[in-house]
Length: 484
Image (cartoon, rainbow, N blue to C red):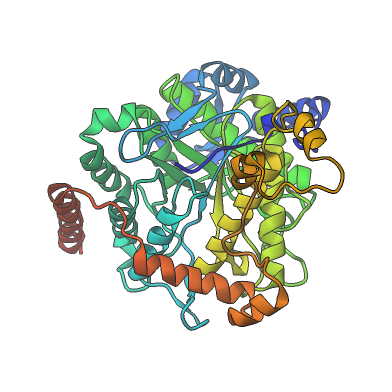
């Protein structure tokens, strides 16, 4: 079972926004919702909010009174638990517990065998899930890649099928439209034993992309209404670019993201009070005004939304382990380590995008195993420290005395394995490093990926379940073909 990293257990926990700042930000968000309002492109959602007391002008511009958000905060659960394939509650998402996983939908893969950046294929998803399944510090998976060898309208279904067949870990899935959602959930239901079983012990959560904080597209709202109606978990994440679709300052760009998220929260609780809801754990992004690229690893936005989510007491979907570098180099390692460290220190919850390069366009399995190794290091950094007779053995120190050694002591034998030993980072002497091939970290990571692919055998699904998933895919393909 992959560990939870808990900032609550360590004095390293930090924050950038204090309670007074969070209160002012919250007041500003409520004013945006009531004064400016949001555009909704789904009539059912508009009708629900209007009936609850929101005002509607110009057909779909909805102004939301503060009490709808405040009421939603009273009914929404403060913890969302995700389960593995066997029904074990491996991700109790709340408070300052952090769980790390991959990202989704990279158009390209940096092939660990050749170093080539090439269009992703379905086989890359399978290999990515195999590697993620084997890594100790990866708690959940996303599909990593958007395969070019699958028809666009079927990508979501093939990705979900591959994840379900290749790992027992919890899954976060993405669909480009609403029509895919029932199909991917039917697949998950086959794995766990039916709709009721999935609702009681969800093995999958949905990442719902929203156009912007103030513009909510039809597909996002349809997903929210369907998932909240069934009580299934999802993260509702508006996309906002400072300097383009939001003011350029981090707090203002962040406020629009959160205005959109709290719109979704209010709607979810009106639709089904007590249904789970996951806030975005990042925001305040901006375009790099020199390149027009939206960076993943810039420092200005980090920790801010997580602080606010903790202030509200809600679980969040966060982002770390990503880099804007184009290959597995020093920048990639530094940015991955910095973002992973800050999310652990702030207590980001469901933290995705490990293995991302190229500002989210390229995925790397070698980078993923480097992130896993970094998390192993960080796990030891944040673990609680105990001072007792065993960790500070004064009698042993006195017994051995000045000039003695501890190599053959029972105390050393009992405890030396508790220290951190890298499996990827280099610790040998120079001669040993040369004898092993004088490889760089990137080269060792690529070799580690291949070793996993050659030796790791993910636990397969029962044949009837696997065949049932294949049948759902065939039915969807036939339906889409008939529609054409």
